[in-house]
Length: 130
Image 1: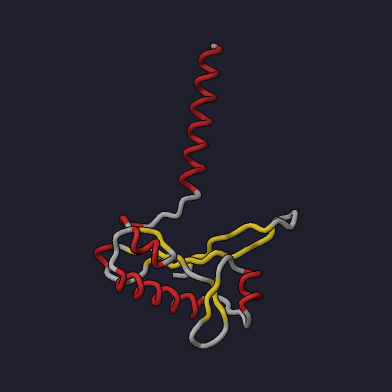
Image 2: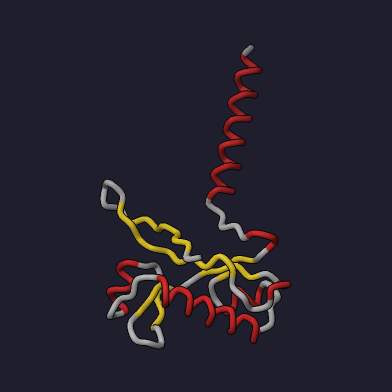
């Protein structure tokens, strides 16, 4: 009976660990690759021109949809990382999925926003744009 309890506890612990690890990993549908920067994109094996176009497209989506700030300081207080929009102001830097068969069209565009818990500790929350 004691062996059964130990094995059951080990299985539950392994299952919880696997669930927690997979739950926090950003997942792209249909074998896409998750990235946020030019170097991330090139590291996945995409062409530099495709990466540049995908980043510009993702920034355009976020610039339209996400809240904007007047200064970089205001933006970085609310979001994890920011960029200056062409229209002026600052918006959160996007991360996105890219698939080799879809060209430079970014899929599942997201950005990170800070939020506070009950103890006023800063935590990040992933906000999906599309």
